[in-house]
Length: 147
Image (cartoon, rainbow, N blue to C red):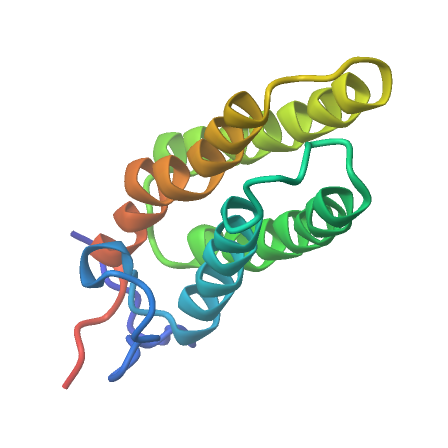
């Protein structure tokens, strides 16, 4: 698989310990952003009595709404420069667009309806865990190998 010779993206020697080893991609900045996303999801799950439209739940959801687009921008810089095939890059970008669209739809749903907490947490969990597993881990194949 192609490995760019002048890559500014190097594998991290010690990725964040709180991310399961199989979910680390090896780029410190991205692994740290993933760690923050997992932490937001953990905080939402840790509030079993907080309804999706409660202030405390909404505060964390808003934080997620700030973190996701910023993370996607950073990740997209890497996937565009790491030698990943164009079709794979496009699929990854489309997955980001879909998550942002779903986030907007979720916010509308929360404004006008009262979705089930379990459904909201399942959706957010899919954004974080499934996206990393299905898309982000592919980045590892295009990074330079550590010395």
